[in-house]
Image (cartoon, rainbow, N blue to C red):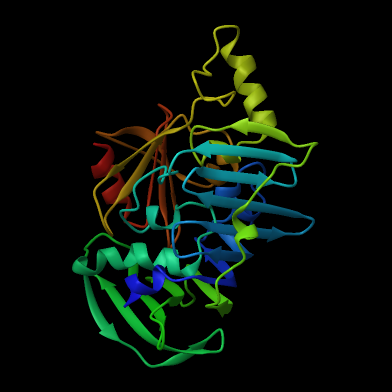
Length: 324
């Protein structure tokens, strides 16, 4: 039923609230939208034609970021930088959506509830499933599905997914961890419509004064111009531009493990305030090397001296095992 609903036209406004325990550090992270979305609340709108074209607009004070996706590729528009970046092709995920962290990283950096729920539901075979009480979301009656991870290292206790009782569309996703009463992720529609959106929602023409770039990945499309310029200066005349249309070589990311136990390991992570985040962390060492460990009730992050970063909604021991 959920799968059929995702193939139907729809639009709506939604709020994504996250609380990974990073507090004001995440909220104030400048120049990195993905990090800033690790804490706080974001208001967005979405449109989908049910045939592969979609648009998400992240609404912020005096600025807007849009992801307009069609079969030809994805436009990423940032009004604050007057920058439009085009990612050609089908614009597949930068990293596979396998688990608790990568489920949050989709075609945008602020995922609608239906998209987030569809990825989490792919973990149903690794979860206990039950039905919760009925509720109303965005004015629509919804049935609640409760997923409980079968994992000894995941910090997540359960995930609640509210599904439209009439259409099967997921309307809200809430994720909970040990020791925290409020959800670490609360992604819910405020309003929803099942009328076909106008085709104009999926058409984008960069303004005449915009900086227009070709980007190799959706992650690179969000790079601020100043970071690109710094990377060019560091690279010198040889450069590291490759065929990326002016973008610095992107961070290398790979996944260790799947499902609720996954760990994201990155190398070449740009400086977006890691010094602030790791200033109050614990020094650790082992077979994996030496580094700093930061922990919250919702997240474990290990930043090694060799520049690798490992993160997961898992125990620190799981991070160390993944790095080893």
